[in-house]
Length: 215
Ligand code: ADP
Ligand code: 5GP
Image: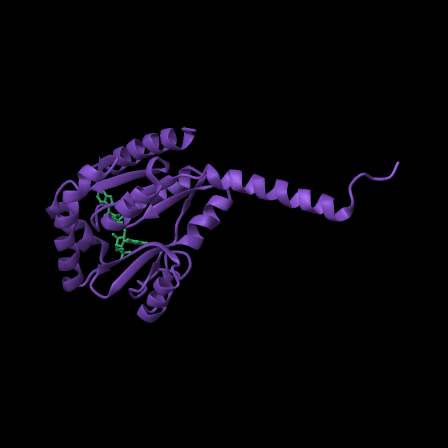
């Protein structure tokens, strides 16, 4: 008996099945948004979470601020000049972007979200409050928005000083912005007060596990 399918038809079906498989994987992808005033401990909590839940993957943002010591281009951020950043805005390459501090642009690339979903992973965002709420508005039930709160502004300032990454000017900018950001907690799905780090991580972990297991 002659083989019923010619090579082009078999090839065509293979492509359909392959793309349906990958689209299904991408369709199940969720979004976990973390926002917090700088110094609250959000990066510390997110790193612990990523280390413990293998289906989570960090969305590497683009930004135009200078690289800090120890940061790696393409791992911590895609570091761009202000001109390059603006070109990408014109090309409609961002899900969202903000001028988080005067002259410093930060944004989530559409290609980054697609890349992570295509792997069947859930996307973790570390974004400012406005960016976080924009992502939540865009994706609705598919997104969980978590706000990490410091126990107080005084403790936040102390943590930033101990982290040793700020000049007196950037420290003042970050503390000033923190007061403004703390007014947005009501718009988030979950507020975690990061007083005791282990407790904050455990609480976050439990909520995230429950959320990603939902159909
Ligand atoms: P963010 O990402 O919110 O700017 P980081 O994760 O960089 O904050 O944390 C700021 C500093 O506070 C870091 O030096 C970190 O080790 C420290 N830190 C984080 N959580 C706690 C905590 N619960 N108690 C004391 N220090 C903390
Ligand atoms: P940092 O300079 O400390 O790395 O980040 C400063 C602020 O920019 C943080 O609040 C961080 O969450 C926010 N940020 C980082 N990436 C993005 C992004 O892609 N979009 C938005 N809107 N904010 C971001």
